Image 1 (spheres, rainbow, N blue to C red):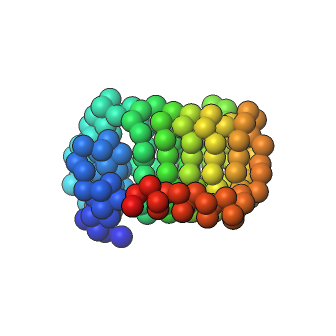
Image 2: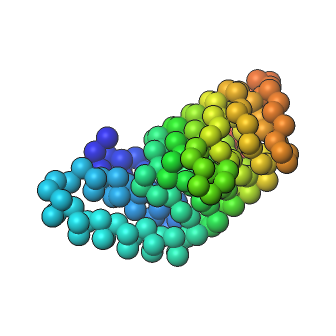
Image 3: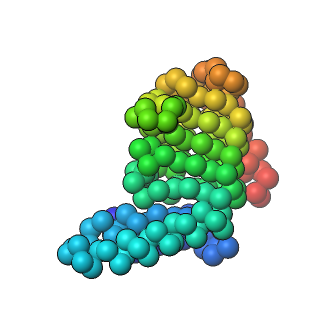
Length: 184
């Protein structure tokens, strides 16, 4: 998607609220990705400098590190302010939710391989996803979980180290009905 279409979708994703720090990070991220396509290099150089300023500025203001090398899907939601680190090697699917204190990165310095998250992954506060692991679609990662192994689709990962449990469809339906009742 072109830059302005991505930004428009991010604007909607963050409820058109210019004060949401996740939106600030997404603007810097989208600009950083977009600048790679600018030719010639002489024109791209000042845009790269501007991106670095934006990235450092958003890191200082928000405590969120999302490098433009990270591949993310549509509608990434960064729910809470601060202490979020995502590796440039990571891949995030559509409709992923990240909360404060989340780390998605390498298991060890100098060792390649970062997590790949599927679609509709909900990552709880303080969770750490480390190494070349794959997280399937419709997965919930519990708060403070340390995930070092693959997590199949429709599962829940909780604990240190994370234990994988199937996600019960009935429980999911109850959560949705409670959420709908609360919003009514």
